[in-house]
Length: 225
Image (cartoon, rainbow, N blue to C red; front, side, top):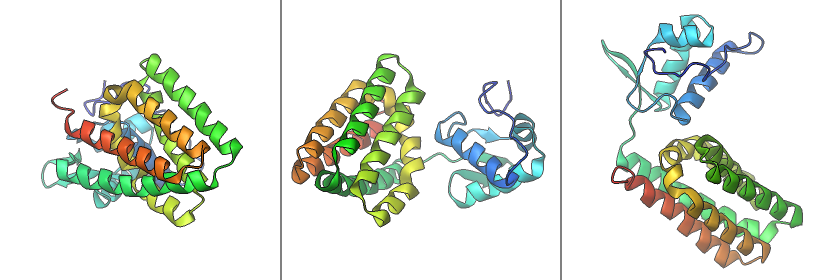
């Protein structure tokens, strides 16, 4: 086990083809987003490099970039640490998410055809199976895919680009509460699908707003749970 705290097999060694710097960055960001690297965890360049099968240079560059983007804190004489988000940071991000996704739900209700609705239903079934199997990683990934599909069905490119900017942080905040949200989250997804299928824009907006608000409240209550 690495002192960086990565379970063996969490990340495969990177293949050489392609821009190595970018691939190291993406690998580390995915580990942070999924909380394989947890908030506050010390990140040791040499150990991360050995785990990824690369030299220390692309790891150092990736950590500097992650620091600029707010994922990693570089502390003088101490090194790099995964950023620990404050309650205020989480609240601001999740509030913005509510605004974006409520509008996406409204537009999806106005624009979605039968194939799009069927795609949402299939994703919902996958999420329900993941919850039943207590597969948190799959539940988180399927939840992200479901919301991305709603955004796609909205048909607004600018809205999608804005949502993409916060998507990974939403996953970061959702992961520790995914088990608590559990079945209830997917019941709410079913309610959203029904509103979209019936082309009820107001209802779709209300359901999505309540759904994302429940996630925000659950995040703030997570320590109590």
